[in-house]
Length: 398
Image (cartoon, rainbow, N blue to C red; front, side, top):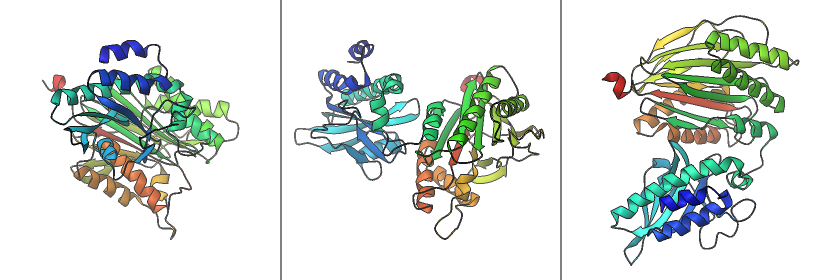
């Protein structure tokens, strides 16, 4: 099944993928295989049919949309574990599995198998893994998939931001990185970036002045300058200066961004950072807020004022989480003008960690909580970036 799907995938479009998966899966005893994709805000799962310009027409007997909250499919998505669904009189059952690109949750796969067939369960897991790779390779060039995972129209600024962002989740044996942004369809100037190079993790979070397309252009310039400088081997201070030069040269309107630029040494757990007028990241250790990463800040990038920030360092312990955020997270207000607040933000993350939830699900629920606090609408961008260090790899410890 997997060999034939790989061979067929080379000349396959996204629209052809659902039918091909169902056919090859049935040949291996995985019947009625269907794919559901998570929407951009991870509130619903939408059936990928491959039919129509939004890849969702003619769902037939399948539900076109399933909520992530309160459904069996949603449970597989939230827990990142296979879930047995409806059981039939003939001994078969519906088996739901998360579709994962590494640790990035894409959606869920469902197949009908015999309830007592462990081999079929294993085959379904392998199939879900291959489907993830196929979606990732075909998805960037499929407008129909982009339409499917959107529940409303998107602004030009948000379109730019989403196209530039790295995956919302990354994980290996040493580190987990997760991020969330709102309002997803109306992003202005918030953005983030991360990358790995050898034993170093690079992170950055930006908040551009304003909440319009120009703000999106400013933050896009900042991201591009940050990546370009980093790939030239620049350190944090030099990267900040490079971003400043690009913003001043390319934007004559005086637009600026606040930022935190950060590096983590995966072997030692030493984190280094600088701040350009941005809120200080929070460190959570063993279920407690232990410190805020503060230091002498530089001026926001693009102002031309030239105040150089202090390069700071902190020793992490295995299991520590660092929360980077923009002010829209803590300043979101309810109808009575009460802020969501930094205490509530950190307390929410701590409680979800105590519940055993992984970083991606913690962030999904955090965004839901902030939106509920603000009655579904945010006046400012709200972005959070979480890094969790597990400690050095086994080879380093040995």
